[in-house]
Length: 237
Ligand code: OAD
Ligand code: ZN
Image (cartoon, rainbow, N blue to C red; front, top):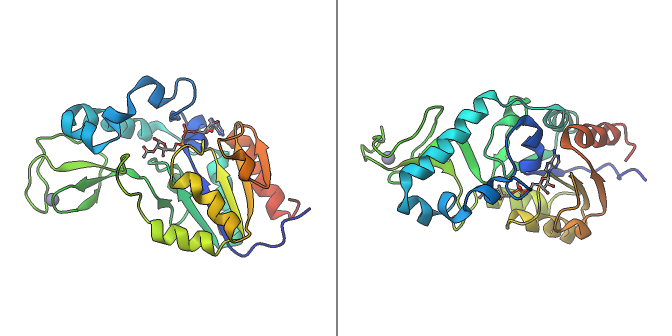
């Protein structure tokens, strides 16, 4: 049955939407956190213990981004945003593939690899170079305070107020390529349900909170996302 013309849509994406662009996921077989210890590479404590090791990890990931290309799934979400208008596109991804596909106003709740942050003065700047601990912040002059502008475990995700406002006003919530293992994002489906929004999961396989969705389509993002978006825009889902 077609979804009754929703006015306001929230889309949440995770690593699965970028998997076919060559950027690894975290918890799948061969995922980043199965090869590297999360507590060493994605916590403030890990950074304090071995900052140059952590910088190197994110420098490598930033370099990987230069060759990564958005695919038909990212493009379909841009199409949805342009055709429908009221779409808040929230991503847990630190890559820039939604932007590469032409999306507007992407809400990066876990930050962005393409930005640096000074932990002393809070300056954020676009960054396409490697970061090292001997660098000086151009704003406050501190040495060794520049870090990737990504949110680590134990830190507060960005833009939460805006995301919660969008969720509390949405009538359709779509979760794409995320395992549902990391809060607060894993709780968004319940927030959408609380306001009686329809909920849809597009993923390679059922996520940890698959039970909470009204509808689901399983397969690779480059196929299922364009399929679903095109049917939605044709008012067939
Ligand atoms: P995960 O690695 O936890 O989950 C990726 C999801 O994508 C899984 O459910 C896969 O089944 C699915 N998937 C894999 N390949 C896919 C494909 N080609 N098409 C569609 N789906 C596919 O990644 P996230 O849920 O994004 O946070 O992880 C959430 C957060 O945990 C990340 O933002 C990151 C991580 O630690 C921080 O670093 C703070
Ligand atoms: Zn500074």
